[in-house]
Amino acid sequence: MTTDSLPSEHPDIAHLGLSEASLRVLRELGFSRLTPIQARSLPVLLRGEDLVGQSATGSGKTVAFALPLLDHLDADQRMLQALVLCPTRELANQVAAAIRTLGRHRPGLRVLVLAGGMPSGPQRKALQEGVHVVVGTPGRVQDHLDRGLDVAQVRTVVLDEADRMLDMGFQESVEKILRALPVERQTLFFSATFPPSIAAMSRNWQRKPQHVTIAESGSEKPAIRHIVHLVAVEERQAALDAVLRSHAPTSALVFCNLKDSVRDVAAALARAGFAVEALHGDLEQRDRDRVMAKFRNGTTPFLVATDVAARGLDIAGLAAVINYEFASTPDTYVHRTGRTGRAGAPGLAISLVTPRDVDRLKACEKAAESAIERLPVPTSAPPKSVAAAVALDTLFISGGRKDKLRPSDILGALTGEAGVAATEIGRIEISDRFTYVAMPQRVVARLLAKSPGLRIKGRTFRLERVQ
Image (cartoon, rainbow, N blue to C red; front, side, top):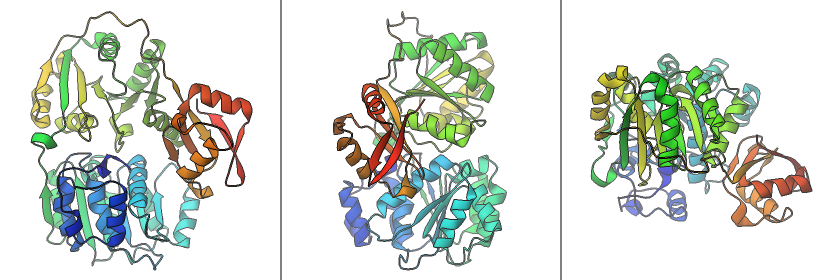
């Protein structure tokens, strides 16, 4: 699950009117309290009302809409009844995983991701066999709609990160999808901000929506330290190197405004000895999945990305966000820096600001509602060993969700036949056709030397080290 599932401040779970299936899974996940957005949204959503929910990224919005969505399903009818639209494939996968986890005590529940980067044929086949919930990106959902996707029984539609979807130019696709849905439905907008474009869509597509706005204050506000270093353009790469060595974050997401900058910065960091990957729009989906898996499981602690490539990413425990190239707007600054300091953990946001960026600095400070420290670039001597020594590798297994593999199956095979200690197995990330597992480098080397395959549930799957 993502950080949306973590318990927080509200104690009234048992009195909200959730189904026993929902209450059971919440108990198993360790919920004892709800976040503010969950506590205020759930009663409205369980009554079937429309809603505009506004709160920061990582505040618990996924659980807030997923629980009522599941409680309103008729699991005996294998037809599409709920649709969740997300701006990116990565976010769609995260939301779908959360819905599957929250719905694990609902026998036969079928949740399907419809997003680009994957062939549409298997998606059409899954739709023909019947699903209850679709989580998808607007472009791919519209494509299936044009091919005859049956939405006549959709009771709930959710726009998750609605502001980002409109920023990315999806408004026309979103409105075409909304126009095709039944008039009698529940329509939910969840967003970190509430720009005029969202207000206009709410007026056009919702019926007397309730508004729930959670302002960050006190203990609810992320504990993010904001730092700015004023540098000349030609000094930025050296400054980035010094910042990473001085602060030594366990992980960092480095933002650039252009994909060419992403390539150059990642290459320079790699030459300096940092374990780093680049994420930009020119990557094939398979390479994108590989890069993100290695970043999420800690094999690669540093990722350089553009805003477009990084939208919708939810990385648990991200230690730092670094603006190599300064954010073009205050909203972009808030969205970037909000990736760190999640779930009560301290965060660090560092920006390398050139003289031409200074005018935007005050507006970003106001939007972030946090003081930004102006400090000189660190000048301490670099440590003897740069931040490159990564003890983890990522193991590729050629089977996934479509092969009926579950994390427990992977864990059992590795600890059984392969003889790996459970304590040596890190994050297990299962996709439709393959699985990534974080493990110590020496363990991966030992496994591959022993055999190129692993038997799981009576079948042999290919093993590879992810490069």
